[in-house]
Amino acid sequence: TLNTTGAFRFEAQQVGAETVLAQIVRMVETAQGAKLPIQALVDRITGWFVPVVMGVAVLTFAVWYLFAPDPALGMALVAAVSVLIIACPCAMGLATPTSIMVGVGRAAELGVLFRKGEALQALQGVKVIAFDKTGTLTAGRPELTDLNVADGFAEDDVLALVAAVEGQSEHPVARAMVEAAAGRGLSVARPEDFTSVPGKGVAGVVAGRRIEVGADRYMADLGHDVAVFAEDAARLGDEGKTPLYAAIEGQLAAVIAVADPIKPTTAAAIQAMHSLGLKVAMITGDNRRTAEAVAHLLGIDEVHAEVMPDGKVAAINALKAGGRRVAFVGDGVNDAPALASADVGLAVGGGADVAIESADVVLTGGDLRGAVSAIGLSRATMTNIRQNLAWAFGYNVLLIPVAAGVLYPAFGYMLSPMLAAGAMALSSVSVVLNALRLRAFKTHIHGAAQ
Image (cartoon, rainbow, N blue to C red; front, side):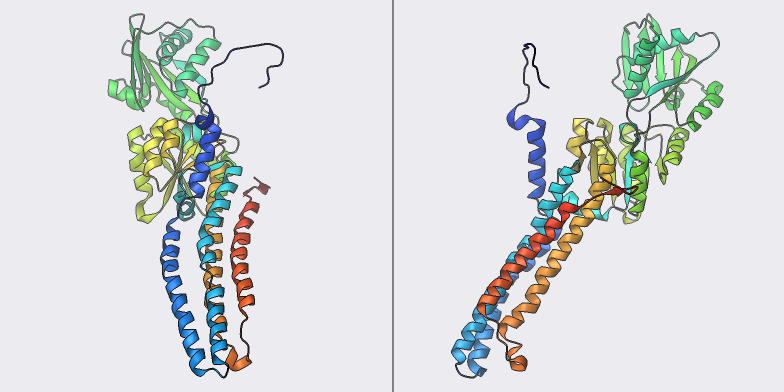
């Protein structure tokens, strides 16, 4: 923002290392410097590599010195030195970290931040990806769509009382009701008492009247029979809307429906997940009819509905049945335990701080196509690492014997130490060049590159 015509005073609450940009840079640097599990195997092999090469060089010198034609000492020295020069632990050491650095950097360009480098390897083995619904699959901005009142109640009166109680809640559904009341120009009182029951609803006292608003399970807990609105609730659920109920002074007063629009890119992202061979699941607190309507619309394979906030971890564990690796994508405070318990947790940027802190990966733009990019890039990076390792090990296995002189008896060829030095340098350069190919990685969704 540029201020060009006036003056103002402002307070910077986060500067320098505390800014969002600085935090993003730190996350990328940390991920780029991480050691993947595959690197532990490489480290063990590399630890044996130097003494083995030294032993091969000594053996080469001894064999040539004892059995080579004159001048045996010169040939023995050339062969032994060539072995020491051509052996390249550098290529093996560079194979993994170069791919990680390029892969994580490319991910950041695509709006995917790997908070933990290990997630880069873990994502490639994911078989199931589960999504929270509100704020993840949907925009997180529910709107009031229906308000059907029971006999003896007026719509505006019920909405004003409901908005008064919901005004104390930070839930997106609560905001939808408050905004609907404001849109009708209704006067909303301040409640005298307020109680929130996570995953169920809210209650309060407004102008001396007890108001209770929530899901059917909350009404059941309170002893209210919602059967009178069963037909309306079924219809609303089939339309993908979330039916809620309001009770005034112990009497069921209305069924209220809110609808949260699905993000424009969600369907394409889920279709791309299927093309990657993944099963897609949804874990939500919505009633089953609404959840299944949304799942049918988006082509989601498995639905866990009416899940309380503390039940999402159990749902993740159920998805892990049979040894399947599970990734979970969420954005809210109640998603944090599930993000932590999944094999890989992906937090939607702009969500709750605790969700982001619990996740392994952050999708900065809130676009679920970022999850497709993360999985695709994970697979591409691990493939790149395997190519690098195959080249590094293959190079040493093939050329160390050549440097030792195995071709001399049949072809009379001895490798020059100068050529050995060139081959050694080329092996490291080849690994780096192969890793840099990841910069060209693109995610294709419906043929359009992201």
